[in-house]
Amino acid sequence: MSLGIAIILIGIVVLAIGIFSQAKSGKAKVECGGIVFIGPVPIAGFATNKDMFYALMIVSAILIIAFLVWGETLKNRKMRRFTMAFKLFLMMNLTVLLLFGLLFGLLAAVGFYLNFSTITMVVIAIVLVFVQWLVGPSIIWMTTNMRPLEKKEYPWIWETVSGFCKKNKVPFPQKIALARSGAPNAFVFGRTPWSATLAVTQGLLNTLSKDEVKAVIAHELGHIKHRDMIVMTFASVIPLIAYYVALNILFSSGDRKSVGAAVLIGIGAYLVYIISNLLVLALSRYREYYADNFGGRIYKPSLLASALTKITYGLSGNKEASRDALRSFYIADPITSTFEVSHFSSEYSDLHVTNEEAKKAMEWEKKNVLIRIGELFRTHPLTFKRVRALMEMEKELR
Image (cartoon, rainbow, N blue to C red):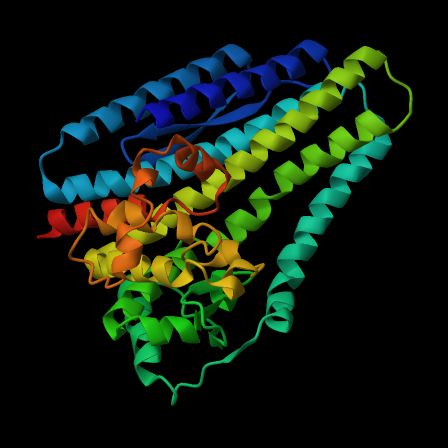
């Protein structure tokens, strides 16, 4: 809960700075939007002056905090599950709010000092992200050893996807693909939920049981349901804009009201670039948790936990997976799998993992602060945390 409160407060401060800068400049009338959460329901609110906007954001923060505290005290199991999903939904949206707050504050500040060329750079950044969104799926198909999966090859996979989609109102993927990789993994990509491709690796089918593969499919359909492909693509525009702004200010010449101020803004823009990158990574981790929550709700959480455990063991030491450029798309990160296997193997003995050597390895990680700090730079949460959340969900469902 402390992280949620921190993000709320930081978001308020950043947005307030941006609004104040605009108001002080006299160049633009302050017309700002905020979001008030009444329980689980987001209500858009608008203010025409900064005092009203501050009040709106403060009320929003109070209501959010009150709802989180109330959720912690709930005894009803069904309501607790709802609150968990709402918390994840809330944290994702607050992270997006903070990202755009950073962007708003940055552009409000640099607007005093920049000429048209920088605006051009920002437009270029937006165009690049749009092009990435447009051609990205085609590039993945061309650069990945992947082929369409015929229904006659694995009819149970098609039946599983169809059943989950119909029951949970998820758009059916345009294609189901098989990646010729020995590393156990799965991912989705595409421009929209209706044009998405769901891919599983041969290693996944060889390593996991049918039920565990179904649990993984449920998780991946959660990404389609939540439109994660679109959200993450467009969230990436913010660090890119900050980078181009910093580059243009620090390494180009032009008329400036103050060279010193321009340098400070350039440094600030670079800091925004670093912070926004960390926020995009945080958003990616929250969306993984959210997809886990969805997959656990429509199938068995313990099976998804077991699948994640086996995938992590299977990826640890897999050189092919560690070199894969698509690792941010995967259900588990192959780069860091080796460094987390011991966290959950000793804590959860019912996950049907047989790698005794891995179970005994690296027990020191449980108390290793560096591993926890390193999570800030990951696209995926630590697997043992995901397993813990899924096992808690399993207990609540019993």
